[in-house]
Image 1 (cartoon, rainbow, N blue to C red):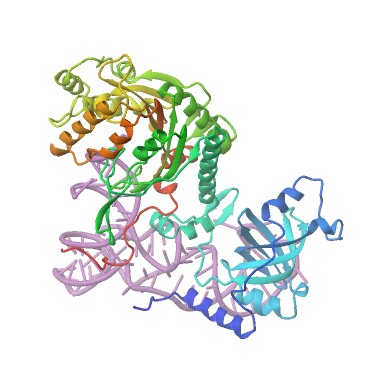
Image 2 (cartoon, rainbow, N blue to C red):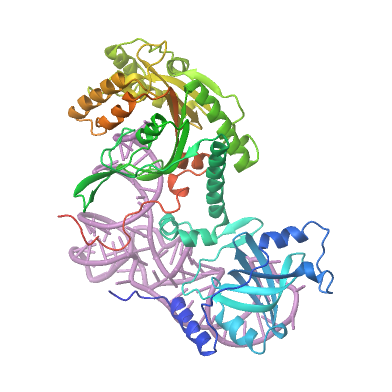
Length: 516
RNA sequence: AGGCCCGUAGCUCAACUGGCAGAGCAGCUGACUCUUAAUCAGCGGGUUCGGGGUUCGAGUCCCCGCGGGCCUACCA
């Protein structure tokens, strides 16, 4: 192992650490009693009712013990202010030499405690002459010494300066990104609130949260290339799941009326603003229901998320104000295409569709079937125009090998996607439960696979066996949680809603580099 | 996978047609007992992503590589 070269500032912090130890201070103690947070203190005294003062009024209200990270330090001779940050926010602390044990202020606080160090403080709350609620520190304790300097952000009139702009730095060292950027912490809190809302929404309806295999001998449920791995003891090839769908529907066969799973799927694809190889998916299946019913559920659930995350059904996202208030517009895919392009595609054969695509400037190649052409036209001319939440219904059967045929429109399936802000937020259908049709659809997938489509699904005989025992009429739903999080937090990249997005290895060439 | 852009101090960024690598913050020394982008005086800090080339001279130009961003492709 080569020794990492360390900066001047890091070297100094290591010296400080040694100095602290030689003075008898443990730079990494075991615990600290916390009785208040920045948020509770600020709330308590910003209401204008409880006014703190140094005269000792209501001392039982004002005595607090808190812990956090030093974010700024301002020393003025024998007294100093510093800001520290806990999980709820920042609070200012005031330290006087004469309030601390002999020598502590000069030889420890001033010299050996730095921005980035974790400290515990105990004292009373007061308001400074400038009006800022602060804690007057009477006990100060180092809780963990930081050996690396923390980037320092400055703020004036609400504008933040010296924000770390290097995306690579932020993704690789997310702990630093989170520590210094409150807005990044907020994104992930919103994401957590979003998922918690969805979970309780589904739990309250009596649906059962289940866990199905990540490691699968056969993958399916979506059109995507899988990751492969190997199990040593059984000496077998395994796939990381690309979807939960086929296992969850086996559970509907087994007698659960409603099951859902929120979990990671893995797809062996490129990375982009909208794609991370591992991502979080919600899938829900409800027996005795169809896709019309499912649209109502989606409206309710997403409306609940909007209220939970933003406190309102109206949300400003980028330049758009979006209303998630029910009901949302519902429009069949072919009608939506006609509205935008003037082309009525329903009933056209493959050559006629190719001609329409050409008229619309959509590129078509020979491998594309009728369904794919329609999908391309939709994706290019319609999807980006749908800003307010909209249900697009009734898709071509070729694109949906697991969806039930439409009850009245030949060649289509009972499927919908909800589109919002120009992007898909969910995908759902009346589930195909006729084992004969399901077998035929799988066989069509196999033909596509043989023709070179490496995303075609393999045939899953056990799944067909399950259907042969009888699966109720069922409505199914899939929601890309990361993309929903992008929407509700206004983030432009999926990497900004995933704590640790996939990155190339940081240092040099990987050891097990493949042949050059 | 292809195209475009980027990589300079711990962080944010400068450095003209190729001519001594700089500033703010952070850090260090000193002053200051209600400051808040604290202030004031002084000081240190660089493998300019890595390797090669052109040149008297390269952060700058050329080639190769590494890493990142955006777009395209892929991706229901």
